[in-house]
Each structure stands twice: as structure tokens, then as C-alpha cells.
Image 1: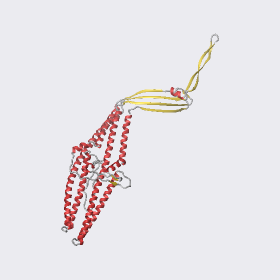
Image 2: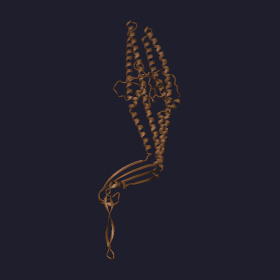
Image 3: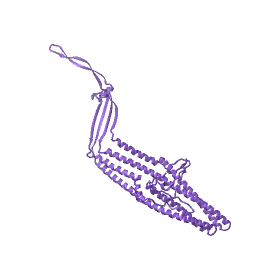
Image 4: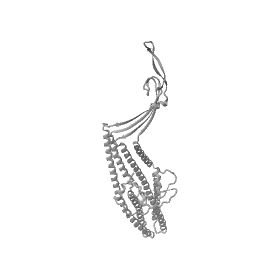
Amino acid sequence: MDILLNYGIFDVNLQSIVSLLIMRTVRFLVLLSFLFTVNYTFSQTAWSLKRCVEFAYENNVQMKQSAFSVKIQEYNLAQSKAALLPSLNAGADYNMNFGRSVDPYTYEFTTQNIQSSNLYVSAQMNLFSGGKNFNTIRRNNYNLMASIQEQAKLKDDLAMNIATVFLQILFNQEILKTSENRLLQSKDQEDFTKKLVNAGKLPEGDLLNMTAQTANSELQVINARNQLKNTVLLLQQLIDYTDTTAFEIELPVISAADTILPYTIDEVYQTALTMPEIVSQEYRLKASSYEVSIARSNFYPKLSLSASYSTGYSDARKQYAPGDTLALPVGYTDTYQTVYMFQPTFTESAYPFVNQFADNAGTSVGLRLSVPIFNNRMTETAVKTAKIQSLNQELNVYNAKNTLFKTISEAFGNADAALQRYRASERAMLANKTAYEYSEKKYKVGLISYHDFQLTFNNFQNAESEHIQAKFDYLFRRSILDYYAGKGFSF
């Protein structure tokens, strides 16, 4: 999520001071590595920039959702690896048959009620599938790495947003400080003008004008204080802070802005190519290339190995044991002697459950070969679609790099313009300050009118506010370059 900060022109007349720093399209995880010389005084209640970022990492809903996405990709990768292993399944069933039926183990017809059960274990293993499993592992691995980079980008965006609001808080604090100083100046000028009016050296209208100026200065202080409170509230909302206790900001101290740009566009661009939004797109491209291989694997035969073991029990099956041999008369000889046929007998008993499970056991091992011949062009269509998606991802990578280069080029132009503006505003502020101090001395001795003095006072106010805006504008533009140059975020 890119941030777009559009610095508006500050209206710093006697009526109001408007804050700057609306969002601009570039990420800004960095911000303070070059611009802040940080002296943190750790306390129990103060919220430093580091603490705010860490709190947001733990509580932001989008960060939690991103962590879930990474976890899902981890599961997908683990599952694709597990697909290389054999599958093993076991099962059991119990049946009751009524009326005429076939005994499942004697294969004889019977009319009695039968109770039977069956137990089986089966295993299957894929031996060859056109490289589909291995390509799926590679694809899921790159998808996982892309998700990790996307999570890193989300962290960068979140930290950048928080740092941006911090910079706005610093700006509003500076505006409040300047407004309070102007209020003190206006009160001093009002008191001095009142003395001159009472002494008859100035008309009463000058006192009324000075009183109005003091009232306007008070309004500026109120507006600046409210703007600072609103910015702090924005920070609380940004980090999902819902506690009702006091929220004290631990502000870093800003050092003087540098007056040079130490980078070249090419140096920053080459470093920025390792940023998460670029790397994630490259990983997605590699994953899409394996999608083509996965689709193409359906052109190849598939070979699998299977094995099973089964056994069971039926109460219709009986166990027989040899008994006595019976001599049955079957006829006579010519001499009238009886002829006997000897017939063995068997005793029937129930077939024990345990014995049946051992005797009914059976195993099988088999190979299965599946050769694709024609499947309504589904595989061919899938391959062509995967190739188009891969080509589209190549364009995504190109577009991401092209956008990055344009953004860096624009950032250089903006930073250079902001630097020139900062230098010019500093000269203008110092010149107007000198003019104001000189006119103040002349006004106090009655050498110039109130209107002439007020003109120099307004010019100084405008120049001072313009300088504050130019300073923070340059700090922001410069920090963008630091971010893309890989300096990181200094805590």
C-alpha cells in the first residue's frame, strides 16, 4: 500500500495555520534514519515510534490476516511433500443378511439369517505422474516465499504509515510552538502599544488593531493545539490502540536537515530491486512457470502401486471335525453276504471368531497404469492457459520494476526541488526576521506607522511558516530516498 503525501501550500496569515502531510504514493518504512538524531528517554507511559510500530504489528487486523495467508502456504507446501508418500487406509464393516443370500466366505446359498464382518487395510503409492508432484512442491515453495515477501511489504507499509503520522505530529508540534511564540510577541506588542496610546503618542486605533492581532494569535494557538491532538488521535487509530488511558507520545528530536543528496538514481534503483514488492512478483513468476509444467504432466501416463490385506467373519460358516465311520449296507453278494459301504461322518460346530479372522485372510498387490488418449482437449487448454498466466506475470514483474524506477526518478526530482525550496525559504526567513526586528525597533520609537510594522510582522510570519513547511517537506522527500536506498528504519 503506497502512501501519497501531497504537501499543500500553507496559509500562514493571521487567520489560520493549516497542517501539511497528506499521504503520497511511496512507501516509507524508513523515514528517520537520516533525519532523526534520536534521544529516547524511556518511560512507562510514553509511546516511542518503535513501540507504536511493534504494537501495530501485534494488533493490526491486516497483519494477522497476512500471517494466516503465510501459514496456509506453509500447509500447502507440506501437503505437496506428503503427496510423495504412500497412502494407508484401514476400515471395517458389519452386515446382517435376512432370507436367501450368499455366505460371503463359503459362497453357498442359505436362507438363514447371517451376521458377517470384514476388516481391511490398503496402501497406494504413486510411482510416476509426469513430474506433477515434484513441480507442485516447487510451485508451492515459491508461493510461500512470495507470501512471506508480501507480508514484509505489508509490515513496511504499516511502519511507513506510522512514521508518516509521527512526522506530521512533529510538524504540528513545531507549528504549535511557533504559534505560542507569536502569541507572546503579540501580547508584548499590545502592552507596549497600550502604553504609547496612553501617553498620547499613538492613536487608539493602533491599540485596537494590536488587540485584534493578539486575538488572532490566540486563535492560531488553539487551532494548532487541536490539530496536534487530532494527529495523535490518528496515530492511535492507525495502531489500533483502544485503551482509554492517557496516550503520551515520546517524540524524537529532529536534527538540522542535510543540504545535499548523496545518492544517484541508478544506485537507489539497484538497491530498491531487492524490495519485497519486487521480489514477491519475481517469486510469483517462478511459481507460474511450474504451473505450466503441472498442467503438461497430464499428457503423460500415470503408474501407481497398490497393496491390500483383508479378512472377515461369518456366523454361517461352520467348523467340521471327523467323527465315526458308518458301515452302510448297500447290497448282497451271490452268496447272500451283505455288502457294506463305509461312510465317514463329521461333527459340526461353530467357527470361532479368532480362527475365522486367521483363515479368511487374503492379500493382494497390483500395479495400475493409466494412459491418457483423449480427454476433450482439457489438458491442452490447461497448458495454454497456464502459459498465458505466466506471460501475464512477466508483465507484472516488468510493470513493478518500471513503476519503481518512475517512482524513484520522481522522488529524486521532488527531493531536489524540496532542497532548493528549503534553502530559499531559510534565506527568506532570516531576511524577514532581520527586517521585522529592525521595524519593531523603529515602531517602538514612533518612526514607522502600525501598518508598516504590521506588514513586516506578517511577512516574517509567512516566511517562518514557509520555512517550517519547506523543512519538513525536504525531510520527507529525503527520507523516501533513504528508504529506497536500503537504509532501513532506525529505532
